[in-house]
Amino acid sequence: MKAPKAPDPYATSAAQTQSNQQTAAYNAALNRVSQYTPYGNLVYSQTGVDGSGAPNYRADVSLTPATQHQLDTQQAQDSAIADLGLGLTGQIGDQINQPMPDTAESARAASDAYYNKQKAYLDPQWATTQDNTDSKLANQGIIQGSEAWNRAQDALGRQKTFAYDQAQNGAVLQGQNAQAAALANAITQRNLPVNQLNALRSATQIQNPTFTNTPTSNSANTDVSGNIWNSYNAQVANSNNFMNGLFGLGGAALMASDRRLKTAIRRIGKTRIMGLPLYAFRYVWGGPVRVGVMAQDVLRVMPEAALKVKGRYVVNYGALS
Image (cartoon, rainbow, N blue to C red; front, side, top):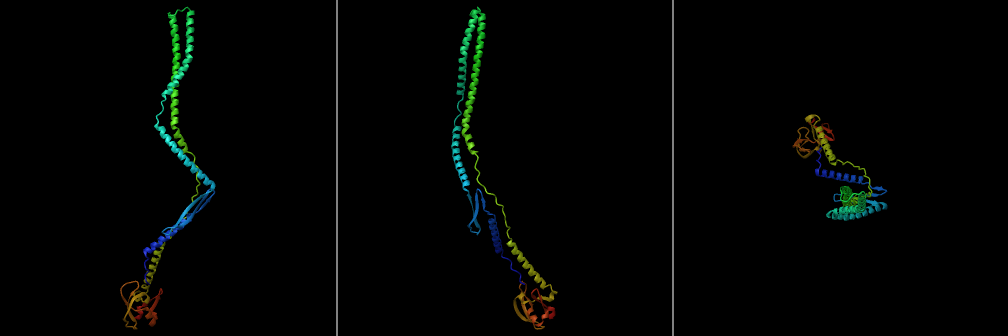
């Protein structure tokens, strides 16, 4: 029995590669599941094959008219918001480059207005109080320039000064409040385009329709290369078992003599006993040149000396002696 020829590694690798590609294409097709929803459809289709023979696919999404209108509206709104944002960005730059307004003038104006208002009220009031005080002192017989008269005038002067100081303090407070209000207003105006831009950027967006994730399924690759080599190893093992069987039946007296197991056969003579043809040959599995008979010749003259083992003949040389 001739030993099997080893598989071609390149052919084996090519077969494995082809099997892997076919499995990958099968898995790809298995997982391209089209989806149909109330909002639109996601449909897969094969468009051809590439240079390696792998199929090419495309995915097409089609929305319902209502969903498409919603998407178009959202995109138009996004474009308009983007344009407004660019304009506001320019305004922000202009505002930042402008110095803060001088609020001191606002403070002075508010302070002066308050004091003048208070003074317009106090002046006639204290003029009347002065006249009344002078009349009262005269009626009491207190002469102008006397000590009593001077004390009375000093007391009146202190009251008047206190009243006007209160008015002045109120004017200062009003100026401070006016300055703070002017500054706050200036800051508000400066931040207005920034706040508008932030409001635009944080506006609620319309959600585009989405499709569910298709559960994936995969088929494992077939181990073509492993199967080829396993088959070859099994054939080698069978060949070895057969040859071991031939030489394990009865020791050295039994020899594999089937013509089908020999090559390079040439006749070199005949045996002394029974005159059987004698040949030089090699076994098909290799090895040195050997000399012996052919089992088919022995079958014709002494069938009992030729045994059939696993479909091939062996010769009992002990029976021929």
